[in-house]
Length: 448
Image 1 (tube, helix red, strand yellow):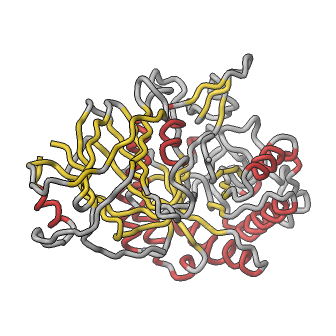
Image 2 (tube, helix red, strand yellow):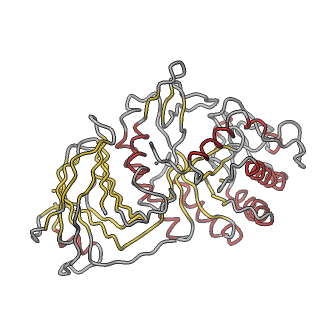
Image 3 (tube, one colour):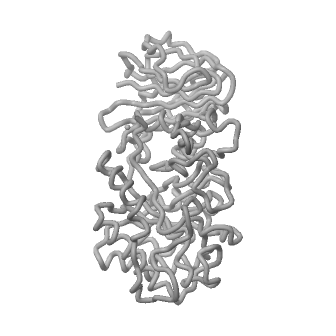
């Protein structure tokens, strides 16, 4: 999954506060140690702030450090201490989430097997998706043949549920076998259309029925354990389906449930990852799951802007911080929700005012890019699929940072500053560079 090695050539980013000797101790390196490694060449700089969007800024030059120990707060980046690889370029997105049946952002409520109970799934059909969804996904795969697709159901067909409806309610255990077959038929039908699905989540947001206001389904912990361990996992394996199973697909604060489910050996042999939303709890809760099950992947699978917010198009720093915190807590991918909606957040058959990564004005087709879009740009254009996150440490509270190494050895540092302008310094062994970080900004630095 990842390697973790430590050597003494580390990089520091400093702004005004703590002595450099204290920062070496934070890595467990004696403060008397001296790195013989440095850096040369230019650092490319890209900035999004109030005046510009992912614009080139003057490059930085490395210079030899004076070797003193200024009293400064310090971020330390260690290129040899490596963590998770990154699943995964205009924007450069390489991961896409699709829906198994209707979501709250569909044009109507539907499943692939409507009507009276049909445990043999004789009526199963994906014809509903042939008009818009499948052609769009096929076109996307032509643009990027390596597109990673994962799918989530918002609800099983209504006849499988206690309330008989796709709106709210809970799953009936007597239909677990049929529902596993439903997943299998979906995966096989999409693959036949040249749209292979690499992962599925068992349920979008397992811990809520959304008060019956939209397609949703409540899954208790024991239900998800039984469904994955005894039905879905074995069925996919028996049919040689390589699609991965991701658990939970809900908020950080359900980290305890995720650990309990993964503690079950029958679940663990089939579950490859936990999918997360950030609406409740904090990102560091994902690290609790990683610490308990370090071989299980973490993926951030949902989160998006509010189209009614006055800061819809300018809240890049908020999203830069959100993405950074997720990535610093073991996430391998980040997925926004939704990709594109109109100026009224439509299509929408649910109660939430989500905006798209982009807004497409219904009459003019004019596109407005959200702040989340610009935050994505700072990661997706330069951090390539297969990159590895590097260690970085600091006592700074107002500047978020995360560092990656691409497979070609190129390093990428993303800084998010939600506060006032700051002057900081970068240090790599005996080499340093100075940088002014604009207020309310996301800044990406890249060097060989």
